Length: 116
Length: 113
Image (cartoon, rainbow over the protein chains, first blue to last red):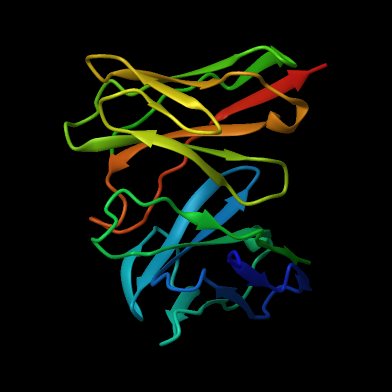
């Protein structure tokens, strides 16, 4: 069974640009969540999508947005990039329903964004 | 979600058991203890979770004290590949309230030959 796939793995952008990252969850998983990891702040939750609806949102500015498609694939977008947005962006998937209430999260390898 | 306290770093000799402690004195009755680890530059990996009873799987054992205020993750025979940051997270069951995990600083385990 294929794992969580994130693309691109590495990318470089300049300040002011925008970026879109993609995440394909494990087949059958309906929940996708996104995390940002930086050396200073550690792993921080961005948002979670379940069945195309945002279910939870972390404390990030509106420049960070996401969406989920009917096939559960998810994208996150960061507009007007700042130097501090340089980070590893991780996607995690899980079945998401109440059928498995103690389910684990499966993380992808991440997309490493560098903002110059 | 309850907060957790972990030592920032630990060393362990290869082949020996690694015992990673976690304090969660404000844990609620419906909160589970989850352990994840992150090997350098990879995404976090689920290890084990428990509610009240001790748990064991192919990766590790989880010992939860009777009052549930602390727990210990045990890697019975640590290898160099177990070198990673280990995160102890306490929260209600995943999926029932969404899948947000709050990661603290974790414990950086260094397994030495």
